[in-house]
Amino acid sequence: MSIYQQYFALNCEPFSIVPDPGFLYPSSQHRQAVAHLKYGLDREGGFVLLTGEVGTGKTTLTRTLLKRLPAHVRVAYVLNSTLEVTDVLASICQELSIELPQSAQTSLSKNCIDALNTDLITAHAEGKKTLVVIEEAQNLSPEVLEILRLLSNLETATHKLLHILLVGQPELLETLAQKSQRQLNQRVVARFHLLPLAKTDIANYVNHRLHHAGANREIFENSAMTALFKLTKGVPRLINLICHHALLAAYATGAKTVSAKLVKKAAREIFDTQLPEKKSSGK
Image 1 (cartoon, one colour):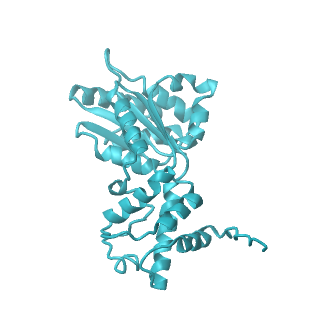
Image 2 (cartoon, helix red, strand yellow; image 1 turned 45 degrees about the vertical axis):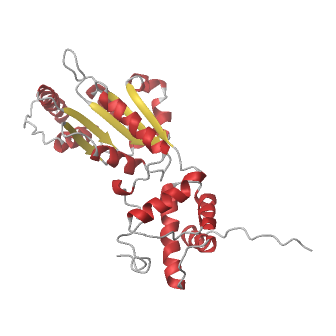
Image 3 (cartoon, one colour; image 1 turned 90 degrees about the vertical axis):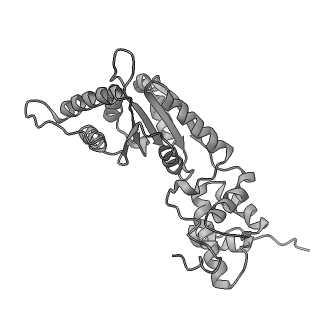
């Protein structure tokens, strides 16, 4: 428990950087993102992209989406995007509880693909959908992207058998825009680029998280919200870091509310940067 929780009568830490779906702030942009992702998953297979700068909430949004999936959707969640082809295939099979045959006659990659294909056909016959989610997808090698493209080809006579959600930074879009990736890029059925929060969303975002943590009054002053936007440009992870340290500073000084001064002090401690001082008028 954070030392300021009892001081501000909070049930839990409101500004943890852990991607907890329960704290997702439902901005209009996040609602649009969920709608785009759901649309992609409702299509018959293919790739779905969720991109955004570092700290914009991609993982939180992804886990919120997964939490809302119906029971008939199976998910293979791959967190390590720097794996080799065989390890990616093995990870997908492991996530889906697919037992691999022990064959010395064929490669591990072929064993994985054959076993996955058989499993997907069985799952489809049972009315199930299968989704593979890969985080930090901007790090995927060309070889892994190609094997994922080949996996997206797995199908029956009438249906694609696999959805693949790639979650990554803007570099992923640059990679897929290359001529060598045009086949994969043409298989993207839905995409959404997550932007930082708008200035008008900052106060709602902060108060949403505080309310979810049990706050029954406003803790951050209006001036603090303005300072937060200037310091973070609306990036949620940075907002969380500064708010956490500002609450600590308020507790330490006995303040009942968080002022812009405390927010700026917290930012200096976190980023180790000196904010520019106001110049005197010289009069």
